[in-house]
Length: 382
Image (cartoon, rainbow, N blue to C red; front, side, top):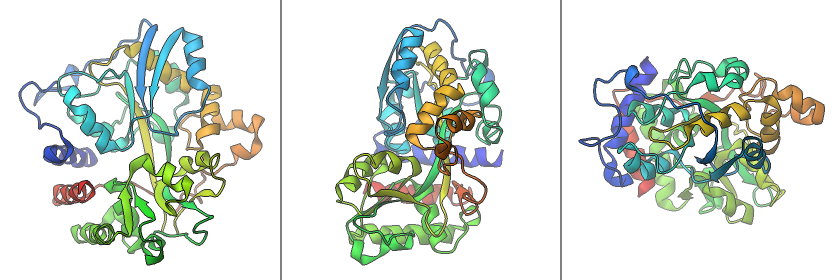
């Protein structure tokens, strides 16, 4: 598919930045698929036996307090749950030395965004799933998520959560902020952060500049990057943080950050003045996916976990806590019985009106994709 071709080029562009990320380019000894290998060469994760220890890497603020222990008790296993995915590129750069040797860094599963799952798949780093182990996924996955361009038949990925990228604001410090344009106001100099994710940062700035990211030209991409670069050089943008905006914005060191919808709800426990807003210019849509790397220890438990969280009862417990868009049908009905207000929460169950001015991550045209990718990564690394 066209989008897959774009993402493959992005993988190559990313690998060309090896020095910046501390990773090696593909070559002899790479544990991924050899050039010309077919899907038949991709290993399928084992479904049995479900026992023993396993490890999952996920993003911060992305799980409730009970699900892991309840899963362990039901299956008699021990889960090591690590919140070390702060940024897609950063995580991949850290893990790739193991992945290229057919190892998983001890992880049985990790959660990455659509485009990063595709990059890893293109390089042969992800296993297929045994769908016989995933009856709940087969039955309850939302139809809108069944056939994404990067994995049309969901051979290797299962959505964890979806959500929105917009602005997280400390309303005690800056209650008037309601747009991406406000983040460039000099009165907030040094108290604003961006994510460091090209798809989120640049897309939102393009919207601010009146550009539809889906149809953006090379000049449009560069104009948005120019704006961000100028703000970073001047100190207007304090840093590119990934998920690490959480602590500073709760403390009041930041007034605002480009950030993800569900995080703000959880941060309110530490500071009730934290709020996620959909920018006046519109927001971005994303999905994060559970994947099993080649060389993963205890893949059967990883797949049991996938199936477990796709039970609407278990998913409702997660959704109630994280406040992201649930990918599991039947969750709304469970929450409606427990808390009708949650069942109407637009951050969990958005309607068409709420998402009308939100768009999925834009893919640059192949004619300039490499150039803008390299330019942005050079900007955020310094």
